[in-house]
Length: 620
Ligand SMILES: Nc1ncnc2c1ncn2[C@@H]1O[C@H](COP(=O)(O)OP(=O)(O)OP(=O)(O)O)[C@@H](O)[C@H]1O
Ligand SMILES: [Zn+2]
Image 1 (cartoon, rainbow, N blue to C red):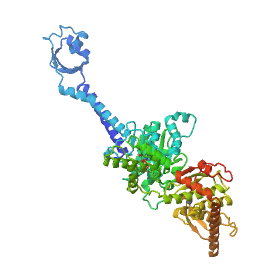
Image 2 (image 1 turned 135 degrees about the vertical axis):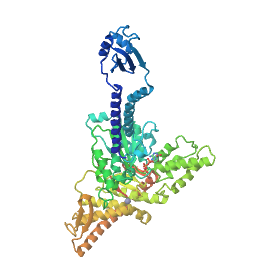
Image 3 (image 1 turned 90 degrees about the vertical axis):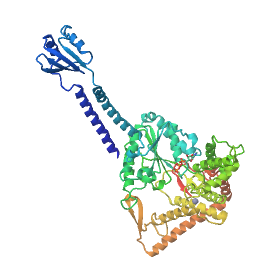
Image 4 (image 1 turned 30 degrees about the horizontal axis):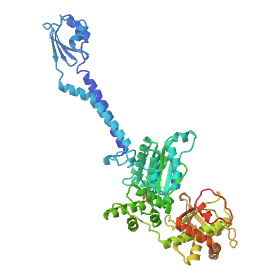
């Protein structure tokens, strides 16, 4: 049954209720309307024409002198005799030898019927309202839930999660404080005409606390939390996903202000039209419905949608447009300090031996996410219990690290010390090169904790929004990208696969410079090759070659030259600044992530850099 059928049920119940009311209303009037009015009865009595009155409930059966019968009704608030006396009949006239008055005891059956007649319509109405109400509450009744969202709502009875329960993600919390404030006092923002955030996308690897953080926002704001998983939207029957979305938002609107959390949004939010054939209809409908709902929010719809994904790259761009998920909060794997803080959260309430060194454990678990650390504490507790200990010791923690690494839940490996060293030099290489090139953007953040596939990353902060990119700038970018591999070569005399993405990007920049931007003196300002773009997909599909084999060779040569030059430049910079490279790499080994300030404290830029607008560009 879908939600439309459910409203039929409600209508049917209402209809039955009204019919029942009418029937019993009619019935209580008595089966035969009084033929005589009570006043006429009185005058018949005074004329001495009445021989017998049988009172049956409020109906009077009157037998006249001539033997004919008629009926009348009396009011129910007083007895027949009282009413007759009030109307001027004398006691004499009512003397039992003249008129026989019989009062039938009310039939118990009639009484029951009457009661039912009054009560039943209310019962049915009540039932109808209960039905509507329950729908509003989002029941999990399997028979009724096909078209309904499976959203689970957590309110007061659930232990509230607060920001204190989420550790090591201070930046993300800072970004979400505004959302909390809005949910607490929407009026304050609306009055100033501020555009209210609608959707927040939480991006990060599995287990970094996306769900936890969304719950914490609801806990901090004290509003209900609805949660549903993207994959639940899509399952089962065709057409159900879209109606589930509608249902979920209906529920949420009734509880606003509130938070709707959509886990695994990539399950519904993949690019539309990306797959060939019609098999994606269902998902697309669901996605469309979601966009419709989000666009339909008024300024006073105080619902914030938080969605989680670890694949922001595959999301339909329509989801990321202003007024939808236009805010992104990135949750990285925690660094040493973050891991220690998370451990602190999870040992709360557990008996821990005084010698336990959380900093040391944090140091030994690079690459662990929050979920791993929670698991680690749990394993340590189990181990201590099995050993019949009363408190959890350092020993148990150390042994549990391996257990967690080997466990089925962990997909990514723990980074080994050796790998860590290589990654540290690689990232330091990018950063040092960037810092020395005046045209390169300032370093924003460096990390050796893997994000996705990469071993680490360095983020650049572009100085300003650029429309035009100069040749020098592009060269500086290529040199920065080569800094990683150059550092590996200089320090370890070896290469790792860690630079594959860097190399791909350098090559792409070089090729674009030569074939698109006319930046090769050798080939001149010409475009080589025709791109065929399928515009609606926004993707380059194929390239048509419209030049000779000769030119093709020249293009390759020019590209290779640009790439090689960039690599050589990076190497010479790092050789010159080797001391700084070592210093940054070693500091990175200790702290795993560095902000711009921390970085520039160790290696001040030879030429001061402008501060930029936060538009992050990753290098790995
Ligand atoms: N930053 C953190 N601080 C404290 N505990 C954390 C943190 N991150 C994760 N955890 C622990 O790990 C558990 C799982 O995290 P959560 O489900 O929020 O991760 P997620 O990012 O939503 O993962 P997934 O993408 O797999 O859904 C949490 O319930 C919590 O106990
Ligand atoms: Zn790199």
